[in-house]
Image (cartoon, rainbow, N blue to C red; front, side, top):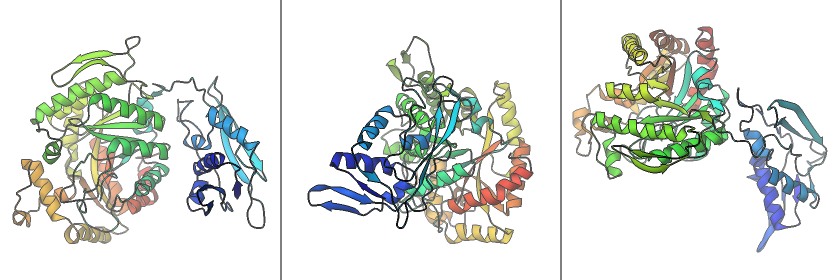
Length: 525
């Protein structure tokens, strides 16, 4: 395709437009641009032969007629000002599409939404043998439409989807991820954003319900070791929210380090970007080196949850619709606010899905008051039932029959049990970062690992549990993995978040081997 622009401004606008189109943008990123010294390029060439230009999903999530449509947004549909400007430029500029030997036909799929009823309009097919700017359907969502509180949180797929047993991916925001403290090949490198975006898009495509980061601000043994590189989780969530369509994207927030007003605003923003798919994993904090890095003293265990309770009450009020009272004062033990307000409100009502991982009495009280999902303290699949039964009883007595109980697991799946066990031997014994695991154990137990004697940990088998970051190991064939998940389900667990060593391979095995068996077992639809 040859695109010629008479003016530099028009050229830049058109180039920006084409770069936003799925797949076509990939060609433009490698385009050869002809320039003259000191002047903007006058033309650029893009080979669009065999390009399938398809907007994929164009329908809104259930119950939300005016949801954000990622593909429509890339096409500029519903953006009045851009559409009008593009139309006016189209009459002045000579833009044509061609391929060697024959003209290309670009098929643009767009779906209009009636601004009155919200009902889906007819699918429009626009065929042109030669075109310059795609026809834009106006207007799918009126500019005046307010998306605040238009999706019920309880109806999101992660809470009430067709799958009885939910699955989320854990830790894809730090180097090595939650695949263990290992230097094994094919772990997350966190060298560039595309690596993580592709993982999230693959998980989204495979029907995984959630994508959950860990909150880490500092590594254990340096930037080139496990967890040594970390993406901040709210901006991570915003980026993935714009790149995915159905999966719930979480931010994990260290309550002591992020002001509740800031957290409420960022959460609402990501919720709008995603069309109501934001989740908040609220963490009371425990990692003493990070407290020191922020210049703060770590409070006692129960006090951390008192602070978290006050923090969460503020966030919930900022998310809530309080009618004509659009601001409020708050006078607490840890926070004092005057004229607090946050608009827009989240898309989800009454706010984004909230997750918590506290298993202590104080942690459970926090979850009963504020969370939709609570991670149960499980360390062995075969001994899960007593712990889960007691936790379920505690939640029910607190009036939280609706509280979902999840488990954190570490899946290693191979075609044979021997392959799986050999791989664990490689990951832990050959490539395990024992120094980082020992540091992690010491930090958890005493809060400080700066003067650790590593010789004391060489034969300490308990260090292996920290090599898995405390997650429940599920190792074996696809059948063995599903057997373990069935045991968790029978114990009362309704979902897992899993760490993986090789996230690419692990996601493929989930989709191709584990999910079909889960469907046969009645765990997934």
